[in-house]
Amino acid sequence: MRPPRPLGVPALAPVPAGWWFDGLVVVALAGLTAALAWWPPLLRLDIAVRDWCDQHRPAPVSVLMVVFDYLGQGGALTTVTVLVSCWLAWRHRTVRPVIPAGLAPIVSTLLIVGLKRWTSRGAPHHGAVELFSDGWEEYYPSGHVSNAIVYYGVLAALLAPYLAVVARRLLQWAPGVLTFIGTTYLGYHWLTDSIGGYLLGLVIVRILLRVPWRTVTLPHQLDRSSRRDQGVHRRSQREGPSGPNRSGPREEDR
Image 1 (cartoon, rainbow, N blue to C red):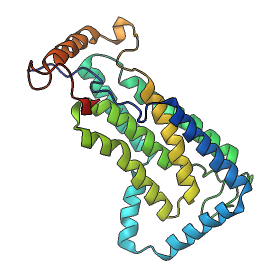
Image 2 (image 1 turned 90 degrees about the vertical axis):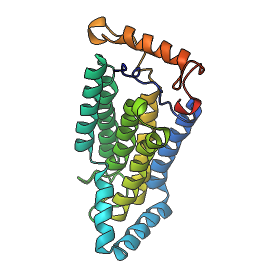
Image 3 (image 1 turned 45 degrees about the vertical axis):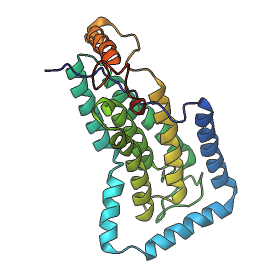
Image 4 (image 1 turned 30 degrees about the horizontal axis):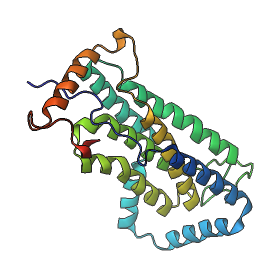
């Protein structure tokens, strides 16, 4: 029986790699928030999208959209992500997979809840469309959309060694788009709530992917497989996936 492929090989890294893109996403999120506070046409766009969706919601499509929206359910995603990380931790005898899986809900909750409470925005069918309305509603940005970006991105990173490139990319990006469509179409969130959630989730997952989880120094008691995995990785680099004629992992697996 072949030993398991080294944990995190191939590595899933942010694309594009530069921090400049992260900066652009943060600026876009800040600009969107400012525009919602000071540019009324954006609020009118939200209302127009909500009204159109309310008038075009046949039952079969609504059922499909509920499924899309549920893809971003935080509790279920946290459970699945933790279970996958625990399986990988047991398989590789290391806590490395558990660290990003544990950080994802902590970082997401702090940022999402903090922004929601600060902006205090109502939902499409109750509460105010304006930000800072001092109501009990807290809907901006969309937690479901942000969750779908963050958790599926972490899952794609954890399962990268076991998935083909296409499957990995679909797992990483498709759920976020589908959740965006579902939660907006059903009127659970304003259009700009979903945009804000997508941008916030993108920032969070890119930061999590930047940490070299497979090489960060850990106590030996928490990482019993480091020597074995390093040996397997060196052997795979020499032989390649098809034999000794290949000098390293395929470029598309990076």
